[in-house]
Image 1 (cartoon, rainbow, N blue to C red):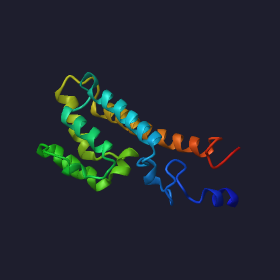
Image 2: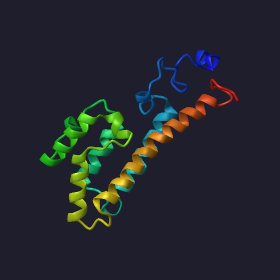
Image 3: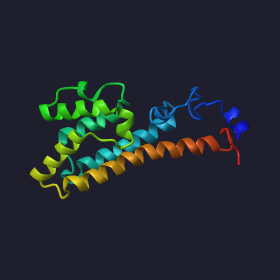
Length: 161
């Protein structure tokens, strides 16, 4: 096991960045990682806008927040109504990396629950949250799978089985 660790040198198998960390996984600038992340966000965005699933303003800002990779705080991204700004500020306290790993602010859940109650949404707030978290986890898990595939890929990966 030590030989494998020595050969890896703690580098990202995709961008070769030293000291690969868990937060790096969803921020890796490698073209393949970036494309996969954007595709995941596009699928989430399509779901959020489908059949009135989500408050339109919240859906708009969440998509932008994800694509900025946490380089900008949620609350500072633009003009928002008071309840959305409070939700964004509460998510900023949790963090972008944690958001991608499905740690969603209670304020976001409350805002969406209100939308589900007041609109023609076919889901209640709890069902919506389950689907939303599933989409977020899919984005992050896809990055993990891609990383592990490229780590073991036979022509340029580090580990050969």
